[in-house]
Length: 564
Image (cartoon, rainbow, N blue to C red; front, top):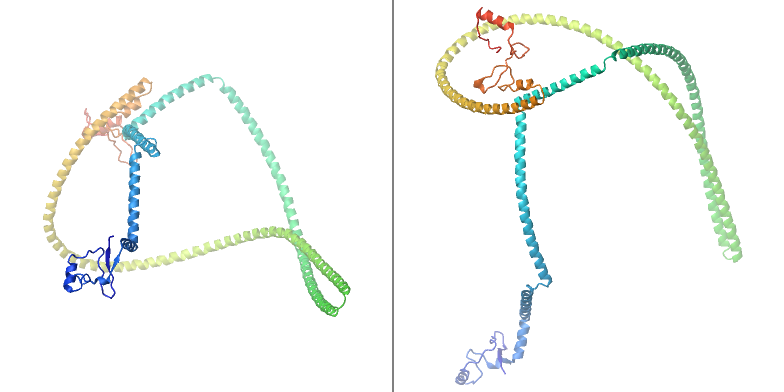
C-alpha cells in the first residue's frame, strides 16, 4: 500500500512535511550515529510527530481543499467535449442536402446569384439611363441656346416682322371676306334703315308716355308725402300724450309694486312667526309625549298601542297642515310672478317706441350741431384773415429791419474782405511754390497714364476684332435663318416686305448706314430737340435746299450725314 507522510505539528512554529516525501536513504545511518535509530530525519524532523495517511484519505483531503478548482476543471472539460462533438456534427452534416441547414445554404447561394444578376441588369439599365439623360441634357442645352438666340433683339424684331406678315395675310383675307359680305348684303340697307327709323319713332313715343307717367307719379307721391307729414305730426302729439299717460301708469305700478313687496314681506314674516309657533308647539308636544310615555311605561301593552296610534294621527294632521300652508304660500308667489312678467312685457314694447323717438331726437341734435359747426368755421375763417393781415404787416416791418442790418453787415464784410484778400495773396505765393513741385510729379503721372491708356487701347482693339469676327458669324447665321423663313413665306403667298426690311444687313435696328468698322451695326440718328425722334432715311426737296444754301448752286453729291 502506497503511503504519504504529513508533518503534524504539536507545537506552534512546527513545519509540515511535503506530501509524498520519500525517506532519505541514509535515514538508518543517521539514526545509528545519533543513537536513535529510525526516529530523526536529516532535517531534524521527529518521526514521532509525523502522521501516516492512506491514499484514500489523502485524495479526500485534496478534494476538500481544491473542490472548486476540480469542479471548474470538470465543467471546462465537459464544455470542450460538447463543443468538439458539436463541431464534428457540423462537419458531418454541412454537405448534406436533405437538411434544413443545407436547404437554407442552397437558398442563400441562389439568392446571392440572383442578386448578382439583378445588379448587373440594374447597371446596364443605369448605363442606358445615363446615355438617355445625356441625350436629354444635350437636347435641353440646344433648346436653351435656340431660345436664347430667339431672345436677341434682332431675332425678336425679325419675328415681329414675321407676325406682321401673318397679320397682313389675315387682313387681306378679312378684306376679301368683307367684300364678299358687302356684295351679299346689297339691297338690305334700305330695309334696315326703315326698320330702325320706325323703332326710333316708337321709342320716342314710349319715352313720352313714360315721362307723363313719372310726372303723374311725382304728383301723387307729393300728395302722399304731405299727408304722411301731417300724420307724423299728429302721431308725435299722440306719442307725447301717450308718454305722459305711460309715466303716470309707471308711477302707479311702482307704488303698487312697493305695496306688493311690503305685503310679501309681511306674509314672509307671518309665515316665519307661524313656523316658529309650530316649532314651539311641536317641542311642547314632544315634551308632553315624553312625559306621557314616562308615565305610561308601566301600563299595559294595549294602552301603549292606543297612545302610539293617537300620536301618529296627530303627527299626520300636523304634516298635512304644514303642507297646506306651504302650497298657499307658493300660490301667492306664483300670482305675483305672473303679474310682474306682464308688466315687464308691457315695458319692453314701450321701450321700442322710446328708442324710435330717441333716434329722431338724435337726428335733430346732429343737424343743430352741424349748423353750429358751420357758423364756428365762418368765424374762424374771419379771425384767420385778420391774423394773416396782421402777420403780413409785421413781416414787412421785419423785412425793413433785416435790410438795414444787411447793409451794416455789408460794410463789415467789405472790411473783412480786404483783410482776407491780403492773406490770400500771401497764401497764393506759397501755393505757387508748392504747385511748381507738384507739376513735375503730375507730369510723371500723366506719362504713366498715357502709357497705360495705350496698352488698354491695344487690348480694346484686340477685343473689338474678336467681337467683329463673332458678329460676322452671327450675321451669317441670321441671314441664313432669315432666308429660309422668307423663302417659306413666299411659297405660302405672304407679303415678305416686312421680313426683308427686318433682315437687312447690320444689327441695332436703326435706319442709318451700316458701320463696317464697328461690327456691321446700323445705328439710329436722333434729332437734337425735345421730341427725341429718329431722323428719316429718305431724301426730300428740303435736303436739296439745304445743300444749295451750304455749297451753292453746284452739282455736288456730298451729303450732310443725315440721309443716305
